Image (tube, rainbow, N blue to C red; front, side, top):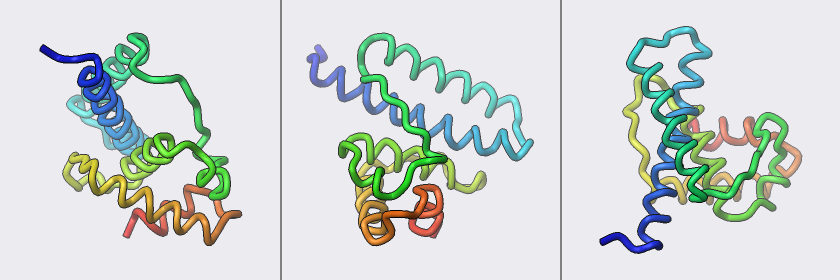
Length: 135
């Protein structure tokens, strides 16, 4: 029998995975190379995310990544930093790369991005992510 804590943990996992899927497929869609499987994956990811958000598994918060500066990024709550890093990593992932999310590595990527941003506080997070995550 699942406890409330394990349910919340599973909810976070599904939400983060859905966010990564949506970010990756959004980037693919922008390139104009979308097949029906990818379209179905996007719809499924959006549906799962909506279900868990409506169920109260996530607190609503919006971050406009296109305008976010490094200084603002480093001041976000730690969970939000990891979530934004997850989205950025999905956005910057090459379409031929495997669709795998390694949550242990994601924390390391978030830490590297925070360190880079601390040294470059005026830089936009998208630019910083291209330097740190796309390597």
